[in-house]
Amino acid sequence: MDALQPQTETTRRIRASYGRYLEDFEIGDIYEHRPGRTITEADNIHFSLLTMNFHPMHCDAAHAAKSEFGQLLVNSGLTVAIVLGMTVNDVSGKAIANLGWKEIKLTAPVFCNDTLYAESQVLEKRESRSRPTQGIVTVHTRAFNQHGVQVMEFVRSALIPKRGYGVGD
Image (cartoon, rainbow, N blue to C red; front, side, top):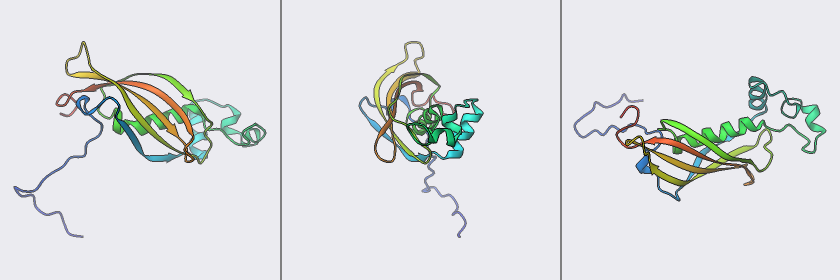
């Protein structure tokens, strides 16, 4: 493999960007978050034990087999965390702070080895009244399994900097 060529006056250097500035959001836009994420049994058990949620539906396969689902359920806290994480690059990668979540709805069960995909639609965008270099963005996020079944939705707001006022600008 060749070594990097020396930089010249015509060489362009492009830094990867993570997240969006307030100006980049448009009400109604829908971000399709990729890649998807397959949740393993190990993910589920580790998260459940780490968070001290010892419910047998998350960590006792013999118990879960006797339930109406017939198998382990993925801990809903893990599902929320994964779906939230999937949105960060598109929604809050430059955020100053998350301001809150509301209307979290778990609309279908999630099982080990399900692959989740998510999308977020921009509901609101406004400049902050008290912070002139920042604004508030609110999105509605929905998550689907590999069969296209919606498994979750929530509304989230984040404090986002304007261009030129983010950390590292």
